[in-house]
Length: 77
Image (cartoon, rainbow, N blue to C red; front, side, top):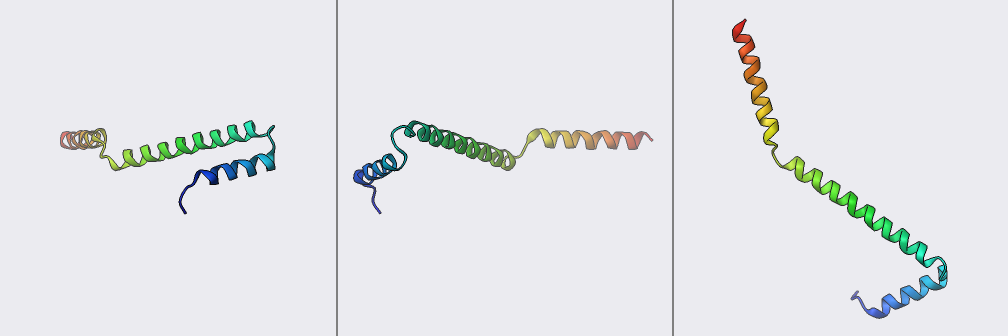
């Protein structure tokens, strides 16, 4: 279904009839807040996935340092 400007005008007229001009700013604010929350959630999920997929160099260096420390302790005993 192709987007046509007439559809947008028709939807806006129906919303205006149903909710009235007094509630339109309130509805617009609610829609804007919902869009901001959605963008925030998707960006957080995207960053978590990219951080989980990226190998962390600190984790590997810490694990090798712990391994060498434990080896040194066992060789001293």
